[in-house]
Length: 545
Image (cartoon, rainbow, N blue to C red; front, side, top):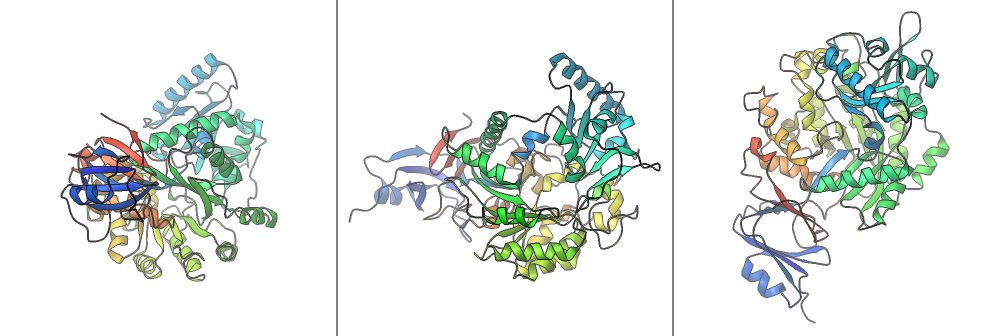
């Protein structure tokens, strides 16, 4: 039988295979056929064994090839609906906010159309401790309906007119930790905590069309490729998400990246809704699949909704997302038994601890042997770090979230936690040292989608390029190799894909080509390091000269 010849050989490149123990930095070649890696070896050996008359040879001299990066946690489709209007990332105080809203209001009036003022990416610190209220923004939006999201999308502020249009007149009881904040008289202040509280606003506000959503999502996926990303895990999915992925994957050239989508399960879901989700476990296409359940153990620290072992400095943080924790445990058991992998949003230390306990009850793995995973883990009790490792639960962390902290600890996150718990923030190095699996991601649109930005934050724990900036917990900085592993092999194993995030025979030929070696470039320069090309299933896309 004739030996299989390569469709493609990438020749003479420095190759970081992410295979344990492979530290070879000499130029090597990668042979690829039918979208998978045939072999990695010396130029001569690969050419002799795998080069045929139809083999294309891409010159890799002077460049570095790694597995394609994977963002372990992002929201590329939900972000289309939520990231509407003005980006408030540059707003630092109330004056800035009002100026930005006035400018956006003028643009809305000039355009005509829906007449809603929308904005996102707002920092809690902009209010400098002031009580969040519609009255702080009503004048700036000239009495128009307005909805502003904070950077984490767990909290929103609605204008008085938006509250009126949505029928929000006071507090409501929710079957999760969502809350419409009211004043002493019972009137809504405009602050809306968690998804269920701001859904009434989204229901009356204009939405992007399906065509607009598809176009925007495809643009986001294409943008991922430009920083070396060839895949990611969506952490907010539903049936419509899978429908959109199916549509994207079956039109044009297909999905530009490989996607796994989790499906949300909330305490409010009926038995019929849960059954419908279970029935979609095996939905999949050429470059996407489901099979993951997303649960929530708490909210966020900044508003007192993160679940903590001890109350925060304002006396909050003592309740989980589910009114009855036994229902959360039952959901873990139900969907594990149905064959799903479980991913749980858990930010506070007790939320993490309780999630570990729930996972331990089902063996901490899906029926297919994929470890269950915890998302965010912003502050960890040291005892729970050890429990993560012992159970083999994946810690999925987003280190660019460090950007929202303030060096003196005056940000709401650090102020509420106090110095001891804040010092345990995003302690990825401790997680690795304990032996727990670590996956890294952005949580886009909460942090920059560019994977190079995420790698740099993991290595520096400060803003890349700001060499004199404060370093948060310097002992928790990751090496370049650890950061790259978190964005490649770590992220692949976190979603149960043994043939991704690695360059070895049989692996999918999803690759990133770098102008220089990302393991030797300083973190400050890594954020700007050109990604020359990516390959998905061995198909080449150029990104830079």
